[in-house]
Image (cartoon, rainbow, N blue to C red; front, side, top):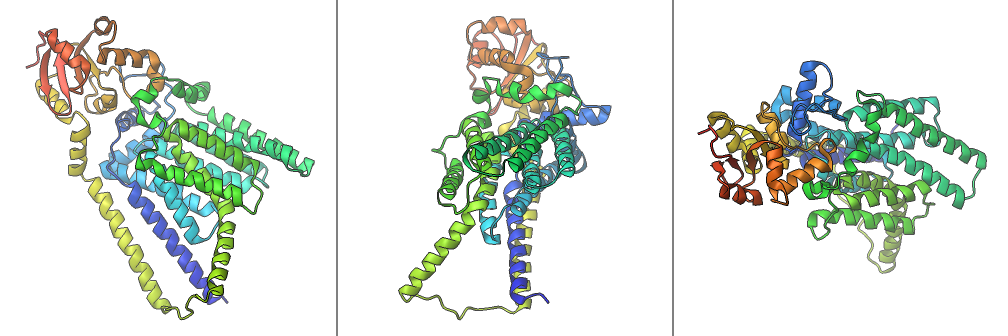
Length: 506
């Protein structure tokens, strides 16, 4: 027979779990627009229509026909499927349910009481929200959480079955998104942590050697799984090609280091200090894996904000291993203090009958559910999406060009609008878009030099046979072009279209 107290505790735990996931959904569902989303959608559409992944550039003229390591081809198919079947509602739902799945798994695999886990999963969700956008990257975060769950399951036990799971995960991951490199880092941190333990903590050498051997096999299996994709060996170089692009920080905010003067960066510091506190006062031995992983992911997060998410997930799991017991000791000390000073807590607590508690729980879940669904429908409504699009993208300029005709010559576009133009004007090749690993520093620096009218910018315009610009009005090159006789075909507060004198468009 189930103990009534245990039943009440289980009901409370389930309630907190549901509330946590609903809060994550509310945080994650947002206007489903992102500068890279557009070209991901177009690539997903191309893959479905042609029955094979897109592995050559067909979107730009600066890299036209060159091999493109499309590491996210399967993730693009997933995004396009949601968009094709449910439009922006589908994209918003895709982001939200992926975020909920990631945080739900994190909740289940971490240690601690329900309230403890709820607080820290919400904190982790706030930090992870930087990568919650309609891009394959969000699927990579889900793979990262699943990998941590597999490590916790098979770290001490499990042989062939665990190896198969690791292999399967990395096969899927390397086709969904190039962020599989974070998973390789995690396994390397696991191996390095075990080596650190062997140097500092006495243990059974045979058992330790067995773990080292197993972790090394996992790394080899993971790398083998990565190779099973249309890009083959080229997939292994994707993380290095992307990180090696020096102009990333000047073009993409998420690749820049965090600015802790911004309030939105503060939750990262809170979690960082809590981990340090947990290590300092833990009653358990801090493992080498926890130390190496914490230092490794902290470094990655300090280098680029896009790495906040793996740090938050790893740090939250680490806190769950140590902080609950510290809280127990603190709670006992506080109770003893109040008891000694005569401030005993009242024992006459109000206890609702079980049926009333069920009604209250259902009401809470229902209200949060209504808020979640209401926000989902609102932020993904075509009117709201269109208003947001007009604010950040050249929506009106594209409409003008479609009506009046495309100017002669090639286009030089804003970097952040490349994907938008690929989706909305597919017949017009772009100069550059968000695929930094494809364009590299050569093209990106060339693009920046033209916009900023650096040395030789006019020669670069002639070299690329640029006939018109679709960029922000405040770019330095706009004034220079007008002085040299180029015509302003269209201008608003967001964008400007400038074409060579003599263009036939009206």
